[in-house]
Image 1: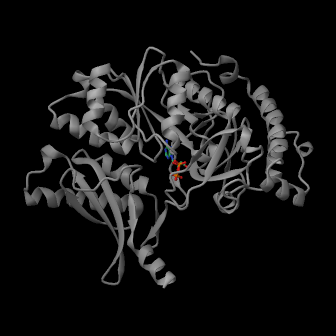
Image 2: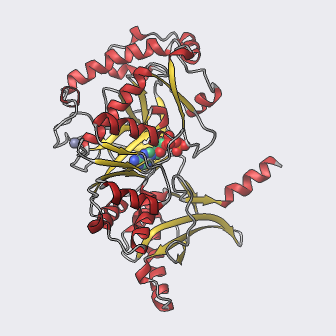
Image 3: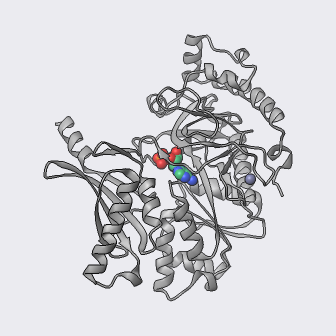
Length: 440
Ligand code: ADP
Ligand code: ZN
């Protein structure tokens, strides 16, 4: 079952041909923008140089810094009269960047979103509650347009206010939800506090989770808590937002829509392609965007291609769940650590609750990794020996995984403060001191 069978099941050869045609068009379109015009003129680049998808390797990269340096209109290929919307990224890693869309771009994005939702088993008979900020963040309107294009009854609930969210679900018989994974543990706690069981007291059947890194363990936990299937949704503002890559019902990697994006997985150091199946940085080129095409955009997200064909019949490549961003990685006691490694360890331990936080700080002259871990509500009973035993287990399992010994602190459920948007997993107090020194 497909949303657009002719595109989703294109033979690889035909898909690549389509990509080459669209890449040439994209290059010509991009050259209408001040940024690419100057860059490509200086390097003598024209669309004629492209006869194979591999030829993209001759083009220079585009980075977030380029977007910032040419803020706001330097990448625009059309007069403002043609533009109907802008979105800007949430700025998790610095100043925001802005992306502009014309009518075609918005329609194309809505279609990709509908295709993505359909691929995860959502149908026009579903009642879809979008628990996500509406506004400049792409997860609100991006999903909204896709849900409507697919034909679901949409509930544009917005973020926060869990009691209201639960009431909406129960009043209208919500069957599908989109939310960030770190919010769902909290939502479940509110269900419990109200004496409700989402499995019995709602009609929920499908969750779409994404916008932030999460582990397979976290997905499984969400599925068990709510009695639903949870599908991974990946996107980034620079590539529209959600609807870039999505899991199908096989739940074995995310199909990345290759008629709309040309993807490369490169070694982040050498910027050479890694062999198929190996992890590297995802570099993406838009193939169907007019107002603001981006060519060889370095996402900083680390993933790999899953080389085997998918059982669902879609021919578009699958990527593995994002292992982290290259700028998420931190170094502690000489070891390179990704927050998702720590999450993976924690969520395999049944006593561990739904939240955790990593703080890096200097204690008595040594850099330490402090891991605060919420334990499950029914487990927390003040028995010191039990707490100490669990602390030891968590400490040694994290050390085995990341090779650096953490300081583990168990805390009550709800003790870790929660922000409004994406979860902040790591607080690096060492950096704060370093930047303070730099600026004074
Ligand atoms: P910001 O970069 O400010 O967070 P975006 O809202 O554009 O702004 O976020 C895009 C980023 O969010 C991606 O580059 C990626 O790092 C992360 N992300 C989005 N979806 C997922 C997902 N399903 N799994 C892991 N990370 C994700
Ligand atoms: Zn599939």
